[in-house]
Length: 95
Image 1 (cartoon, rainbow, N blue to C red):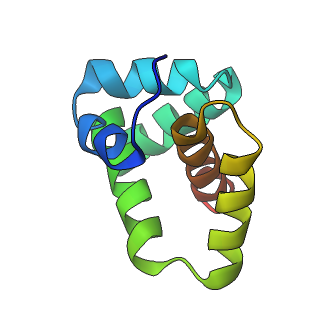
Image 2: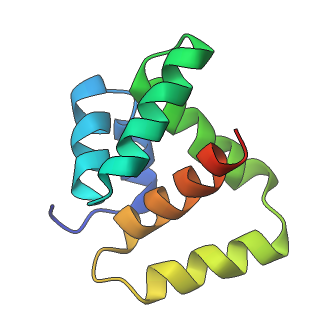
């Protein structure tokens, strides 16, 4: 996947094709399956679920969550995907 700004990536998650491709590009099929299950449980499309989770993180994450997110992004060649993967992993783990 090309290098993309996190804000642009979040905005594109509402497109179901982009959402699924983004989650596949994260390289975590278990996360994709868990996110799809959580979206189904919530009764929303996968893209809407993913975008909502990311937006809720952006609006309400505490300092520790931000530090973890920034660390994951700094260790990755694709920081946008690392951010999505980290945020969704936390969301589905608490679901």
